Amino acid sequence: MIFSSTRPILDVPTDVTVWDWLFNSRPCPSQQSSKTGGFNDVTTGARIGYQDVKVYSTFASTALVRRHGLQPGDTVIILSPNSIWYPVAMMTTVRAGGIVAGASPAHGADELAYLLRASRAKFIFTILSRLPTVLRSADKVGIPHNRVFLLEGLQGSHSTLQECIDIGRACGSAGQVDSYKIVAGSSNRDLCGYLNFSSGTTGRPKAVMFSHHNIIAQCMQVAQTSNIDNKKMLAVLPLYHVHLPIMRDMEVLMLPSFTMESMLDTIVQHQITEVPVVPPMIVRLLHDPKVAQYDLSHVETFSSGAAPIPTELLRQLEKAYPKAGFKQSYGMTETCGALTTHSPIDQVYKYAHTAGTIMANTELQIVDPVTSFHLGYNAPGEIFARGPQIAMGYLGNERATKEAFHADGWLRTGDVGFIDRNGFLTITDRIKDMIKVKGIGVSPIELEDCLLQHPAVADVAVVGIQEVYSGQRPKACVVINTAFAKRANEEGFWRVLGQELLELIQSQKVRHKWLAEVEFIAAIPKGPTGKVLRRELIGQAQAEGMQQRRIVREIQSRGKL
Image (cartoon, rainbow, N blue to C red):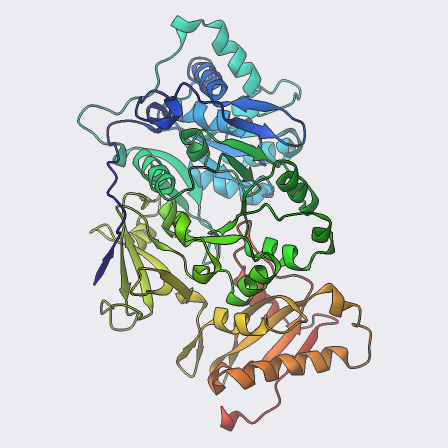
């Protein structure tokens, strides 16, 4: 059975680049004369309007092409925290026909060298504090230092984005290079414009290729499902895509570095009505004492799409913020964003446990991972997706591309879920995260949701550990909240609490889902989007000789499993 979107079909153009679509295409909302939006640094007060982005990018692209030799198809990697100059560097590259690659500035030299090779980067934009690491990485892969640019600041002889703008400006309006165009007879579906790196939770990160068509389609899809009255966007998550706010003429409020206080200050000062969150942020909103100092009663919606939100966390969020709603989306790196989302009318806690309904021009299939049979309503299986937002594949990795991207257009997501008769998708787990106990699949998310019911649990992740008798058994890695942490030195505290958690699962779940052990840790390792890094936890669980580990194990006969 193929599940299709019920939203109006979108006419996604195939003959324009992202640059021409945003800045030179009259039907695009970004061309309205009343456009006043821009990117704002809430720390310094600096601002770059969208018309400035167009002008600066035009000048800088002229300099990169004429002075520094940028060619169409060259990859330019941007290594920077959120910055108002990030969109300028990005659109500079797009206008010249280059390929934009975004990556975290926190990478070490070896990690960065790998990403430079994987993306085939020829130019780098970065910030002053990361310059020494970036130069070491550039040396490892043969990128000359004169192709490393600073987004902001000055350092010796290194060129800056501002210098590129000045060089281009000096050429005059008649001296600017033309923006790159789609070749006659070809399609923007076949023109790669962006690379983003997969999370690497199942191996080393892969460079995912996005076409100009992917980006335009996703912008149109999200705009169709967005609240048109929302004119402010809080950018606290990594800023890899900047096109939608330009299209919708929004004010983007950027936090170059995240702290809970800076985020809350910005939400209150600017009266942000839609707050983007990932699971760690929700935990902080619920348990951080600082939150009580802020009046968040104006918040209308919390939105998430980076990782599944446990039902118990949603219940606690509703209790704390009953007047707000919740918007959940589902997608992955390979889908350029969302496959499903909640429409404004559905952004209520009643549907918060779901990932919304299917985006326009998109189809889903639910497939039994064992039999490969296509399933119907309310039957969980692996999610396959097809639509204009599905990426082109993995750069330089034909084998992985064939495994995930099928020839008929379907993407194998690796996620498990089901669609109900109202069209809502519910994500139940990730196939690779499933724990096999005597051959029976056990969902970590299901057990995590149960454990979060205990008042001591602030955060939790469940992983599988090897056992000779059962193959695998579930293990819970638990972070306790500050109130219970004050009792940590009481005699027998950890043993009693661990036993309570073991018994909580035993009282609510069938025997093969019972925990083998509980370990109390300081923090759950997570990626920048809030996804639990289960491989790190599994590695810790298998490690021997670690000192002062707080582990409480189940005591029972194997024969009863």
